[in-house]
Each structure stands twice: as C-alpha cells, then as structure tokens.
Amino acid sequence: MKAKRLILLGPPGAGKGTQSQRLVDELGIPQVSTGDLLRAGRKAGTDLGNQAKAYMDAGKLVPDSLVLALVEERLGEKDAREGYILDGFPRNEAQAKALADRSIEIERVVNLAVPDEELVRRLSGRRVCRDCGASFHVDFHPTKVEGTCDRCGGETYQRKDDTAEVIQSRLGVYGEQTQPLIAYYGERGVLRTVDGTGEMEAVYRAILEALEL
Ligand code: AP5
Image (cartoon, rainbow, N blue to C red; front, top):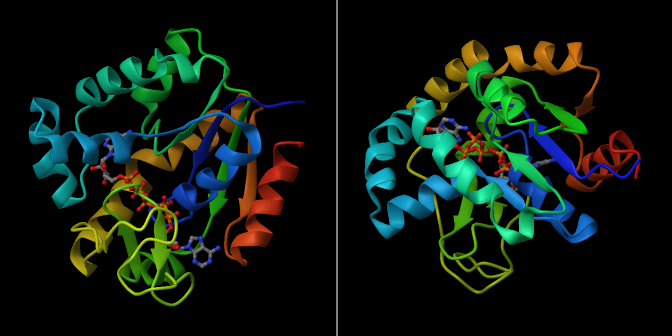
C-alpha cells in the first residue's frame, strides 16, 4: 500500500512534527500542521491568528470553526492534491467527523505513544525555528550552532506554550479530547500504534513499517 493521506496522532511532544518533516521528503507530499498554520496566522496578524492567540497560550484547543476553515483552505491547495500528512489535526471527534463528512478517506493513522514524563522532558527542552518551523531539542537534537536553525539558518526560540504550566494544560486537553480518537480510528481499521520513545531514527523506521512503505 502507498499510503498518501495520513494522520500523525499523538500527545504534545510525541514527535509528530519531527517525524512529519522526514516523511515529507520520503513521500513527496506536504505536512499540514494546524499548529504551524495557526502560528503563521498569529505572526502575520490575521483575524484568525489573533482569535487563536489566547487559546494557544493557555494550551486549550482553538474553536473548531476556526481550525476547520483553515484546514479546508490548506487542503484545497495544489500541492495537497496527491496527499498530505496531517499533523495535529484532527484533535477531537468533531474535527474527525468533519473530515469524514467531506468524504476524505484517510489511509493510515499512526499513533505515536510516549509517556507523560518523557513528553514533559521533550517539550521543556524544545527549540523551534522562527522561519521554517523545524524542531530541535537542547539535549536530544541540538542545533550545530546554538540559537541557529540547521535547516535554514533562522533563529530558534522556545515556544510560549512550552512552559511547565501550559504543558500540563495541553496534556490534560489531549487526554480529554484527542485520545478518544485512538478508539475512533481503531474502529475504522486504519490505526497503527508506534512506540515513540526510542531514538528518532528508530521511531521513523517504525512509522515507515506502519505505513507499509
Ligand atoms: P501544535 O503545534 O500542534 O502542538 P502539539 O500537538 O501540542 O504538538 P507539538 O508541536 O507540541 O509536539 P510534536 O508531537 O509535534 O513534537 P515535536 O516533533 O516538536 O498545537 C499548538 C496549539 O495550537 C494547541 O495547543 C492548540 O491551541 C492549537 N491547535 C493546533 N491544532 C489544533 C486543532 N486541530 N484544533 C484546535 N486547536 C489546535 O517534538 C517535541 C520535542 O521532542 C522536540 O524538541 C524534538 O526534537 C524532541 N523529539 C522528538 N522525537 C524525539 C525522540 N524520538 N527522542 C528524543 N527527542 C525527541
């Protein structure tokens, strides 16, 4: 099977962004990260970005109506015709149903399983590039030059929602609203769970196996 419409599911910090970046190169399809799209909207000062700000800074989900409008627009772009990797979407059952209502058939959902303690370690040490969004970690995946993105040379920074308090809020929201999607996609026969705790390379190999690539 050549899976082309994929979802990377998992808690904050599970490695969805990190692994999506590699899959983009392997599969030649774009990563569609609702978190990145919302952050781009904030940076550009769009209405949607401004409305999303308070929710994101508190670690809460942005209202479905805003996110769905964003996804609808992005999936309509030319580069998404051959498929895409959804990262951070859907995040609750209403969003999953909205995808299904549009007759979008998802070939594979890869669930990255990582325990909370490790997620906290990953999120609190994460650094992200302001320009290209690449994700690094001060201990597990440091940039070659401190503060400078290896990929594009942009400046790296710590996300505002990667503080101890907001991380706890995000983990709570994940457990209440996103985790039920594991059962939702499991019932539809498309879910594969991958152990996300190993080295990045090992996790990547396990994802390719789950995708039967
Ligand atoms: P979003 O940007 O989607 O954040 P998230 O889901 O919380 O996920 P993260 O980006 O934090 O983690 P990740 O799994 O991508 O991990 P990463 O690869 O970076 O969303 C942010 C906010 O936007 C939400 O809180 C919400 O407000 C809003 N939002 C977004 N989508 C929405 C939606 N659909 N509906 C409503 N609201 C929405 O890795 C983390 C760190 O670990 C990195 O430093 C990385 O280098 C390191 N790492 C990765 N893999 C490994 C490994 N195997 N070993 C060691 N370190 C590793």
